[in-house]
Image 1 (tube, each protein chain N blue to C red):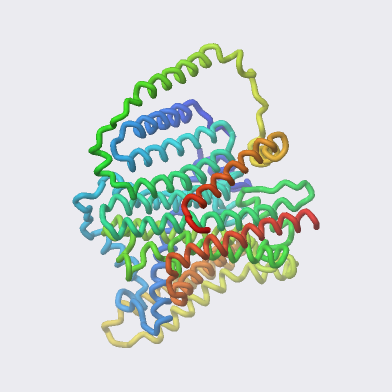
Image 2 (cartoon, chains in turn brown, yellow; image 1 turned 30 degrees about the vertical axis):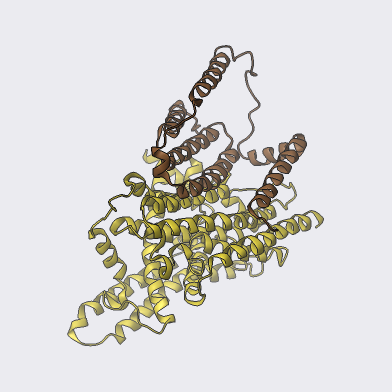
Length: 169
Length: 416
């Protein structure tokens, strides 16, 4: 089998991700922003596929594009968009925002320029067929503690949401 | 070019795995055409069966017993004026039906109609199916919002809430079935659709009956959740006619509306195929473990041919019972021709090489067809749920049971 991970696909998906990321922050209409974000997430899952991580790609689609973003849209649709479009953005966050973006960009450039020393020349290629199994073994073996902590956090978040939404339980 | 086309015939993998582009395209065209025809047939069958449930006749005018009704409908929809509401969000309004259509057709890439009869076999097959079919809720939400009207908005809100809620229980039920694939010596399960059916073949049992009643309960939960996922009665709140006119696609007309319908029926077939693959043994014929031997193989391989012969006989009875008035002459001739073609197909299916190639596809289609009939049956039988009842069933009944089944399956699998 010939590999599908050709440069064309990488540049195509990367361009799609960047384009949709730009659309997210430039659209005035919040629903359009959310839709662009979904497109970006889908392109990202394509990038995961190119890294031979099919499980992560599938989970990305199910959780982010199919679950979380639908909830986002759900809330945004109920907001009165006409009014929020007319309102002036009153805080001056763009200064801090662009500073943070420049810092992050500088970090990326630095890593790109002398990144060869930071990463191993070749990482162990995990067979695609038992990718899911490898992820599971890592999560429940080596990173068991972090995994459990993260799930506990989520549980707390769920309970908190229920408590806040309901006055009497 | 020609070489690769011919050489594939000797191999025994799917065209996607063999990396054969030509055959992959042929398979895609066949599946796409087959599903479209199945949707039309389902449309006719649904109207007909519902009518008979309600002691009516249903479509009778276009063609014998309304057989040509779907074609007439399609022509009507194609030539209808395509209205976009004035203050609608045009781009989103335009994309929404396409998303639903793409999401419901893309999942057919991994559906295994037979050990080699699938477009491709992904190692995350079932994840891919769940993920892509969960994208169709986006189309519903977009359609409802872009219409800039109240009924569609409420319909799409209901729909997205419903689809997300039932997706959770559905996912849990699917996981418990996947867990069963890992109960072999090496202890490695699989997410690939073909792999799941092959695991059932190896373990000599359909997962419906595995760890009875655990597999059965998981199957029932999936069967309920999949009706809710596809927005069909009794969970058709998003398009409850009496409350919301037509729900999220109220403002759609003509071709775009028909795209929604096509997407809905294609999604129904797709989720039914998931259920068949996970619990009903996919392409395996009934009783592969009890009724073994060459004789039984022969008997079961004759089923498809006999089915078509029976259909031809039914058409023949229809021809005989047709009124003898000259007005009906064309219809009578058409029905006779249709029956003749069906009989011819039946005879071809008896030929040994065709018989062996076709039988897995036949059993898969037959099982899916059973589910499609159940959809009609539900619609004729059950009254519509209220929204709070729907949510209660989804979160307080199905989800706890499915989690319990998942834990139970894991425990039983480890212990035995």
